[in-house]
Length: 116
Image 1 (cartoon, rainbow, N blue to C red):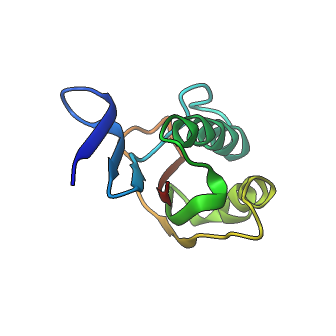
Image 2 (image 1 turned 90 degrees about the horizontal axis):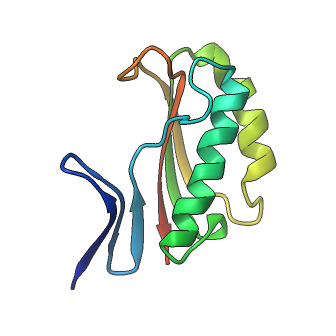
């Protein structure tokens, strides 16, 4: 079975498709670093919609999501945005943990997998 890689660089691909499963790289806020967790999460989820569409799928087809927060105190703030965005009829399996991220300007990173 072929592997399709989209938006790739020397380091990584933003999208990898294998056997009609779409893997997204961890997404951080490109338009809202150093801003509120709400703004960062909104930016990430808007980008996720774009990436899923490019791969031929959408949020109703999500299989799993992993969310990293730099401080678990942001859990409710991030979830307010997540709950408004997510398709409530098709919630993915999900984990949310506290972790340091690669750069201090980010407080949220989200990685998702979806069916095509």
